Image (cartoon, rainbow, N blue to C red; front, side):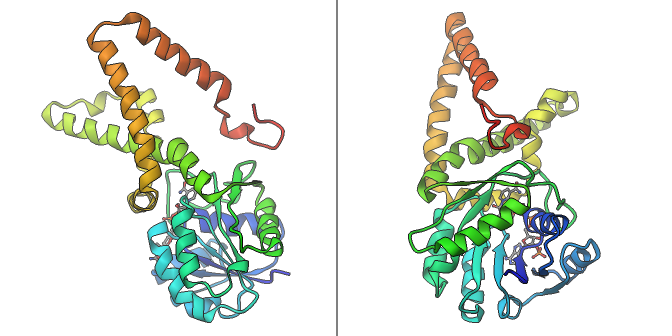
Length: 295
Ligand code: NAP
């Protein structure tokens, strides 16, 4: 029975997890941990958490389950700080967008790896912080569990049940495969959006143009409003897989540039047709990710 949950990092993901569990009728006491007493007090006010600590060790000493939902770059220090205070049966899980580096830190610091269940919710928005969380964020969205060899089936099933209670559809993946897949499908698109907006910012300084952008540009670049610290940490912690994906993208962009330069109509039309057909037939809209509804 999970009666006491600690959430380290009460932002978009940590806050939404708590709100979704409460909405599902879960009665666990939920304790928040962060660096800023004001935002933690605000989380109590919003009904996200019952109480809070700025000391991780104090917060986890009597907990049944810890969800780590800080930016990935903070997790090594978080594991180190909480490890000596964890009870023997305490389950530890995380929501980090990168899995192998988080698992490496867990291996270094956690005393009982059988209780560690790495996870990644495939849900988010461009907003962050205590005001960003909402109870339906995970509903019908995928949640990837990347258990390690040591993870016990019991711990894995406790974490799986909690995420299912939030409305998420749980899948399992190997951690290295996870990092390669999400480097291409999530991390790279964020890089392209950030880079595109930053490029237009530079062009705008030479000659104003940003005020002419329309709905398509706003749609395409929504994710460039995401938290810079979170994405800095994703780059630093999934460097190799992200660079491999970006290398393939650069090759594709080179082909496109060359076709434009050479007025190669056939290549342009073929490339755009492949992209359109792929998106139309293979890219699953977020609201169709429910089990059984995927294309
Ligand atoms: P967020 O809204 O910025 O929340 C992160 C929280 O962590 C903040 O409330 C912050 O609170 C706390 N925090 C930051 N640094 C900390 C530190 N050094 N020690 C303790 N607490 C710290 O971020 P998020 O979007 O929820 O992301 C959380 C995790 O989920 C990240 O690992 C991210 O990779 C992953 N994730 C994000 C998304 C997404 O779309 N956003 C999707 C899937 C997974 P204080 O300032 O009060 O410390």
